[in-house]
Structure formats: C-alpha cells, structure tokens
Length: 180
Image 1 (tube, rainbow, N blue to C red):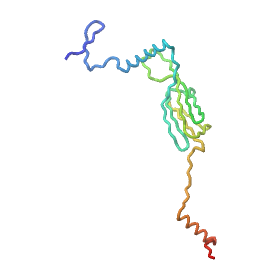
Image 2: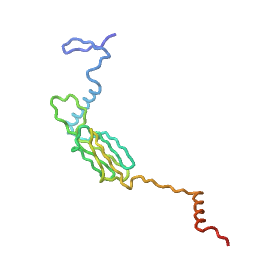
Image 3: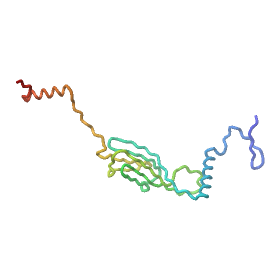
Image 4: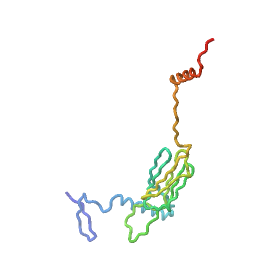
C-alpha cells in the first residue's frame, strides 16, 4: 500500500501514515476562516457594534418567590447592575479583559458586555428583591407580591350530613314541623 507523502521545507520527502492527525483540526481552521471573514467585512463596512452576550442561568419558582442563579465567574459585584421593571428583571454588566504578560495563544473566555433579561409571570414585590454573589454565581431572589401568592381555601362539607346537622339544630332550638 502506498503511503501519503509530504515534502519538507528542506526539499526532502517525509512519509506520513494515513491515521496521523493533522497539525490543525477542522474546528481551528473554521475559526480562522471566520476571523478572516469578519476582518474582511470590518475593513469594507466598518467595525460592527459590540453585541452583549447572555450568561448561563437557572430559574426556579417556590410558593413565595422566584430564584435566579446566573453564572458570572470572575465578575465583581460592582460591575453588575440588577434592575426590576414591572414583571421584567434585567441583569447587565461587563467582564473586563485582564491584563496579560506575554503572548496569548488561545482564549475561549467571554469578555465584554453581558445582558440577561427575564420576564416573570404574576406580580412581584420589587422592594424586597435580594441579590448575592458567591463563588462566581449571582443568586437573585424575587419575592412574589402578596396578591400573587397561592392561598389555601377551606372546603366546607355539604350533602346528607349537612342536612342532618340542620335538622338536629332545628330540633334543639324548638323548631320543627308544625301541624295545623
């Protein structure tokens, strides 16, 4: 079986097995292609405005509040704004690029402005919203308004036993059937 052959810079031949990995994976090549295309687009049209990205989050609901946990590793609480406007909760901020020494070979961390918007059902108690940052997770508790909280309704008995109770109480008070 013939093996693929690749030429060296020095002009000599080098055999490479078919199964050997290439120095660049297809994903790296695709990423480079996207960077080149965006550079070409920016040079002809101009720089595109920065778009805010959305961080990962979990939203849960209990009887008395909504609980939101947003992953924001490396973000300081002073760089985050939490606003409630009616039923909508908006969390905005920015992850700043760290100053580095040396050459950065690869970066997959998100930097720049972020925005998380959430529309919650029902009425909210905006005055008692609490937010806490711990281990890179922003935890927000949004209490429900008293009117929006579920209420337990007592169910009264009706039917035969209720009719018997009424007849019993009528007999005790001297009421009953009269004959003419």
